[in-house]
Length: 211
Length: 211
DNA sequence: ATGACAAAAATTGTATCCATTTCAGTGAAT
DNA sequence: ATTCACTGAAATGGATACAATTTTTGTCAT
Image (cartoon, rainbow over all chains, first blue to last red; front, top):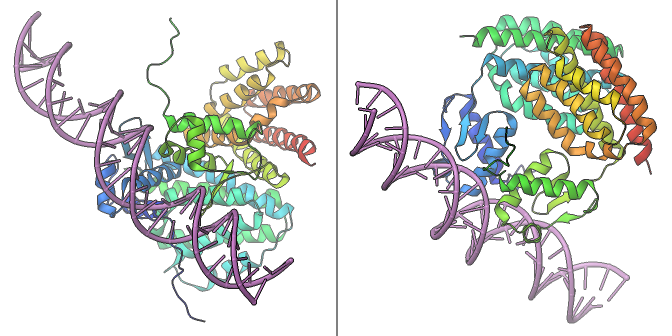
């Protein structure tokens, strides 16, 4: 089958949001800067209306703050920010595990991810890691939960791509542990394991950003 | 101190969102209807720009869905919707309780709410209930968590205002139980109690909307 | 009645314009 | 010299008009 680009594009506001998101996370736009509306629109080659909507998306993702009549201020990764982010993620992902166990949800996709995580080296560890988590969210069957966790991930976790090897090893063991708990349908154990995994990731992140 | 209305108004987009939110929750706008942009702007007496942003806010709150080129479709309270909402709230509010216990946070505001809940009758039970929950969120010190729970509350809980008396009684006992757990700094107990409270509220809600 | 095609309406994005708020810079007074 | 107030520039929030797609509607012929 021919593999053509879909005719219907992504809305411009989301393209703008993606572009800005990447620039913020890669620190091309620095923390504390304020994004001017018209300047941003010019830089992106679009008009101001979709930029304003993109700002709202980014604010929802926690990347910027929209202050009254003062524009969009880029938020940084403070320790407080990181703690807030991971506390919420820990609660939601633990809940996802609990639901997966209680519903006896299908684990084949998750098992698939575990297979890749074991066999592959840490080159594209970031993608495999995200895929593992994402498939647990999906298996919960709670689409709202999937959306919220996706937004949270957008907001911060790109920083995880800079993961070191030592972290990958620890993390891999934890992933396998979580999977075994899910397979055993042990909702308490699985949610606790996921919670612990994420909170430990938080500590990892904090040591890198406590400068 | 004089209690005057603040000079600076709420942004129009948020006023619009509030107005639409109320209309949706009170079913003045029915489930499945699509909100036309210009018609909505005319009805609200404002221009389309802030209405578009209001639509995004409502979409974030889970009250409408923005379909590609097809406008804003009002979502109803399906059983699936209610379950998704309460599962997430259960996870987040339980986490708030856990944090409050671990941080030995100040409970005076929460205690204050409990006092009111005990002494007052069910007339304005809805407000007191919200106040109790809200102050637990606040005490967690996680501002992001407060925002997310606030949005969730906006999305569904107005329906709770139609609470029956029998429910209020059950609920009151659960609130007191949660408070005593918080005072004992029993993080497991408090989070479990909150979880149970919210999931039972879910069942209550489901019996009313399973028609 | 069904299917194709044409017209109408709605959404999305563009382009300006106005009012109000914020911010910066100048200048005066203590 | 520092502080305070005023003035003017710039930016946001909102209004309005308009072009381009896409969706929907409605008609007409088979």
